[in-house]
Image 1 (cartoon, each protein chain N blue to C red):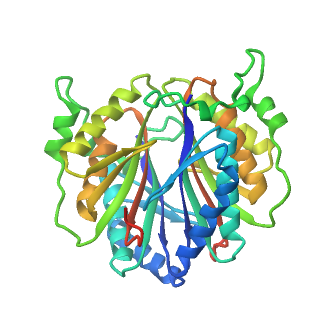
Image 2: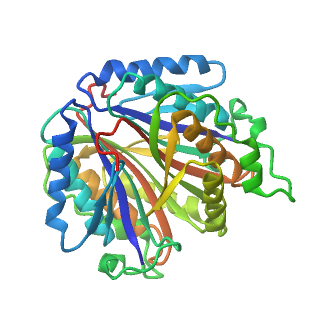
Length: 201
Length: 201
């Protein structure tokens, strides 16, 4: 299996360079578990899906707690048939669903919002289970989970809008990415997480 | 058919509010052809796929020509089975591929880079043909097109990196979104377009 993300953090300030570098520095905690590479557009993380999401959470919260309007945008992917398997991505969290297991109940039971970061965020996420005609059913199950996790604000065209503390929202993103397709499936997710918007609606 | 996008523009400046509002004002040219709605995270555009991409191009270039580092991030979608048909989305550009038509050659022949905007951009895009087991073949054909269009810089994990003038890159995005799946298919695309990065690599 190959899993990872391309993510970017956009601090809406003229001092964006040091802010972004603070976010990247927060990734060093994950040096053992994630491979990473930054260019002019995004930072690549390769590793187990749960660590990938947590590393993005930590980078984002590190930048956002400086205040102001900060957005993280990311594409997460696992199981892409065009990528070679990579041992660093081995993830016990991705044990296949048991045939008798309800994915929504499974995700709810594994959902761990952790400790509040004191950073309220709005987010929107889209799950794309690829290579299957069953993608809409899986998306529907994921939305059921988001509602039960208490982070679901509303449906928007092409995505679900979430709201909550950064810790809770990223914890829900982690489960959404992991629990709604078999271990071997190709799954992509797009996420946008926003803190400090002056136009909260 | 239903088609549209959720997009956001991130101007990395402390004066981001007027910059974003300038971008939104540029959408007024499309009031006849697109429905739109802006909240604290993104602007929704609903309408024909070609107009959706051109409107994003115009909003982005309007903000980017003010200088500084500006990023557009968007999720484009067409044919989602969860959305009702909408007459505003009727798009002659989406005439189905003829059975004997090579999608790459078709996209190349329809590709119109237009007039340079004088805004060099880097971009990364991912195409997700959903509900089919043939998604990797369609992605591969799209990459062939991007190479022939002269905008392809390199492959990255989970996306293709493009480079060129804003006009050329958005023209390639338009064809990539339209030409690599049947009219009735559910297709999603994630794009990030960046101008003025201080860390061009």
